View 1: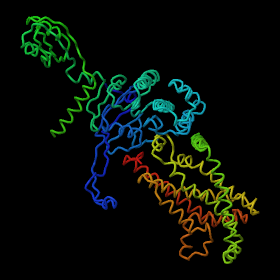
View 2: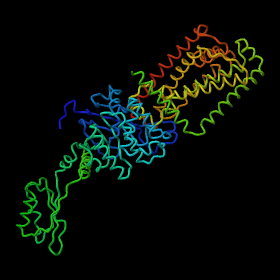
View 3: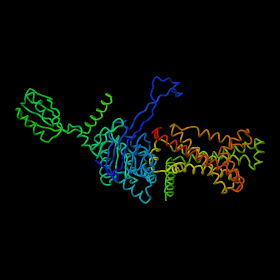
View 4: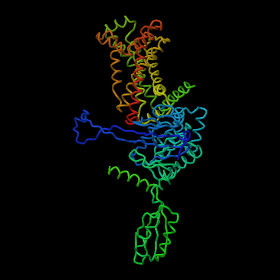
Amino acid sequence: MVFSLADCKIETINLTKTFLSEKEEESKKLLDHLMRRDRKHEIKVAVDHVNMKVGSGELFGLLGPNGAGKTTMIKMLCTLIYPTEGTALVNGYDVRKEGFMVRRSISTVLGPERGFWWRLSGRQNLEFLAAMYDVPRSVAAKRIGELLKLLDMERDADRTFQKYSMGQKRKLTLAKALLPDAAVLLLDEPTIGLDPTISRDIRKFIREKVVREDGKTVLLTTHYMEEADQICDKIAIIHEGKVAAVGTPSEIKDAMKEKVTIELKVMGCPTNVCEVLGVIEGVTDATTISHDSSGLQTIRAGIVSMEGTLQRIIELTLKSGGKIQSIRTEAPTLEDAFVKLTKAKLIGDEER
Amino acid sequence: MSLLREMWKIFYFLKRDLMNWTSYKTNFMFSLVDVVIASFTFGYLGMAAGAGNQAVQEELRSLGYTYLTYILVGMSVDAYMWQSVAAIQESINPWNVEEILVSPIRLPTFVLGSSLFGYIWSTFYFAAYLVVGNLYFHITFTLNAALLPVLAAGIAAMVGLSMIGAAIQILTKRWNPVVWILHIVGNFVSGLWYTINILPTSVQIASQFFPQYYVLSLSRLALIKGASMLEIWPEYLKLLAVAILFLGIGLKTFSWGLSKAKRQGSLGHF
């Protein structure tokens, strides 16, 4: 997808962050440790020359395991961390040179319990944060009321934050993110640690209200495949600080090549039927996974393209004398793609 | 418009801190007991120490003070100085520093907003010392206009010092004792509990570099002797110079510390 400059809300250009960390040395003597002598450092690359674009009104997911560099990217985009190399444009502003303007055009969620004052009520917290984000007084009270209603938090709005459940804290975090009416929302793991019902509600709210209805651009990080698959327009799979793949969930799944796996149960086929099926154009592999004494074979075949291939498989199966009992198709999940992509990278690294 | 917006933010900092403070039910009661006991303690200490040392009495009399007035004004003004040192460092913690700094807030607004409630609380202490001094120990204080610029300059200088401490805290991730020690040393050399004339000459020279020395001496002149700005301006200019220097260094150091923490990526790590 190609964006014009106006359509692109976030663009990273060779965005890189390295951290200098002290090497852990178990053998270090206590005196050396106390005196901080013989300290050895190593450079850890958290984000490695990332180039990506997020379009206006898009819900973009950064998917990756813990430690992949997702949060570091969010922190660079909201100017809490300076890039070591490269830069990023958020709403047209450079995170290196125009930090204040970047912060004026974004809203960030960094964690469920951060940025709130525990002895203040949810409403009082939101009132304070509205002022910090320059929400006009005349607008703030109304918007806070609307958001609390939308997130079903009205009844608990005047309870102190410390008494909230994790789900309520998350909801208040979302309310906070929506207060400034910012064009770009950066959400770091918005549903982590929540029960499935609340996670589903929050996902639905982000997708239907924030993105579809209000037209905001959302960049969220997650390590939940299901979340990324369900709500994101586009996904970047991040592995060891690099973008392993980027595209819509279905594009990423398509990139697996084994677009569909079919499972056939056939009766009376010769044992070498898989060799016959394997040469059909569009079939990546065909294997007999079970063959019982009654002659019932279960065959699995990977298919790149459904067009004509399935029909050809059926024709050849029947021609070889088999009777088809059942056919089942399985589409690959995003998890399959994720595992394949990240595993491939690991193998690549080992080879290097 | 922009200034109004920043003032609005500062007001909300104040409101937040007030609500947070009042949420601790016993806070007010204990603070009240604390300030009253402190006022009487230093009042009686002033009487006892002043009565017990003829040389001190003579020295203070030559300046136009009694030890009681000297110590009470000293303690009341020190309430502001200590608050200035502590405020910013106390407001920097891992739970909110990132969230505040990710909002479109300007550094001076953050600094002022974070410390304003503390200054109001310091005013409470300041007033308590003077009220107890006046009603119980029958001391007459003069609240004249010269006191405000003196306190303002003193606070600015100490905020500068506090920002240096905050920068160290952001980078080292620990509450650092540097600023606290400087405050203690400042009290030692600046004439909080005694006139600096009794100190060795070298220490007296060192006093000239501590803002507390000017704030304390000028506040005493204003509150006890009713000196106007016209009478104290030469010393006030020195305080102002120290304040501008400290505040400038403080702001630069804090910005540098913040910037370095952002480069290191360790802002929210404590």
